[in-house]
Length: 400
Image 1 (cartoon, rainbow, N blue to C red):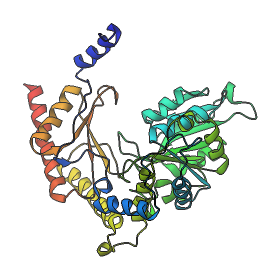
Image 2 (image 1 turned 90 degrees about the horizontal axis):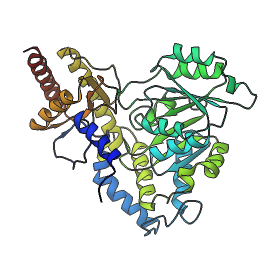
Image 3 (image 1 turned 90 degrees about the vertical axis):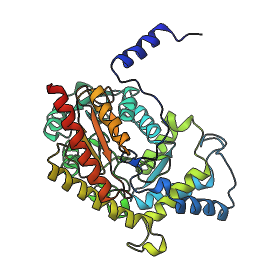
Image 4 (image 1 turned 180 degrees about the vertical axis):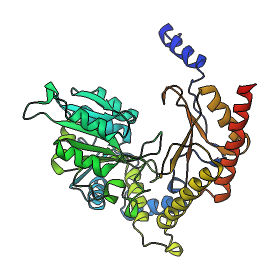
């Protein structure tokens, strides 16, 4: 049986645009591509402690057995959600199977007909997919442009004039494709001024920013000004799953109406235990490396690596999108060009991912460098020196 012609044609267009995606197995190259910012995903200590945690709980169950509203809401859910609420200084935490599921569930269920969603134009695909499933009207504002956002909030949206109609403003604390951040303090003030509900995705801030890695919202003491935070555990926490943080009434609503929560099998006890152990590592006393304090030392190393990366970028006069996070991007227009340079890095032993259109807009293709606690200064300097060589070669070839 053949693939329908319409689908064949779409694949052919991807091939012609040099943007066809394929699945590749992980490499043993120097890692400048993964989201494992603190090395938790590779931590044997977390692996062993998770196993012991389950043994101590007498939990030898492999799967959840069903959705959380049926048989899948095992005891670890309430324990971990209660812990997350305390850690993140919020009334409730509702765990989802992934960040994608959390965003799909929230945005498809919470904003109602005649509500308005204003979202940053660079919002993650999971946010935009959830918005598409919503009955609310949605409009994008210019990336991190608070003047543009406020101008939109001043508009008399006909569908949002009723007493019960709501305006939601959506952003990320660290954007995955640029590594930059909005002015969250002033953004929160603007939302308060216009009675808008602020939602912040903290996927790439958790574990990297704030005391004990709590994220940018708490670092700026904005947790009471944000209606909902979406946190994910598959980046710096090195495991899997996500949670929506907010008031208790929001959790009650999500449990009743978020379809990606209701109609899916829950996470296994092992997944919940890994989340709990990863957080435990982030709560240890600082600098006590002899006691296995993975987070504090690795977080310090990550901060030092980010600083060194920025200093090297400045020294080498490279052009990167401004970022103080673990994500740093260099624009190299054209799928073919950026893929070619990515392959050259592999030949030299470095894994640096090419981000292609249509994932990013055409002519905004880029190399994305993800920094980690386990990268060395030497590796950082070497990969950036190679970038100078590779980009200079590309420019000279284009001029011939």
